[in-house]
Amino acid sequence: MASERKAFALRLDPALHDAVARLANAELRSVNAEIEFLLREALRARGVKLGEKPATDDKTEDGGE
Image (cartoon, rainbow, N blue to C red; front, side):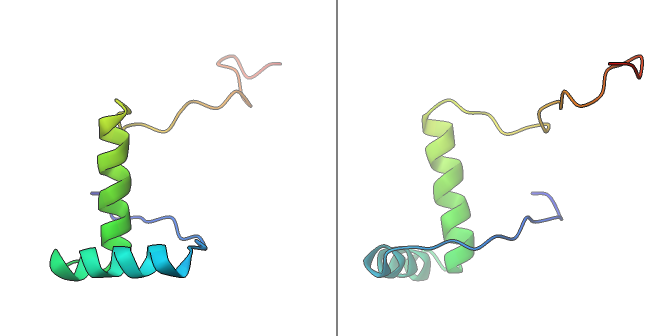
């Protein structure tokens, strides 16, 4: 896993948070780690691969427009 983490606020339904917290506790993870685990699992199930950041279109190779 990468050493850098992107922090952001996440609003969850309290019942959803409680369910994730129970699962995290059972798996000996923090709620944050459990959410990340579940997201990775969901992406893998959908065939989405994690990897390099997508290229941005704000610069061209020759420096022009």
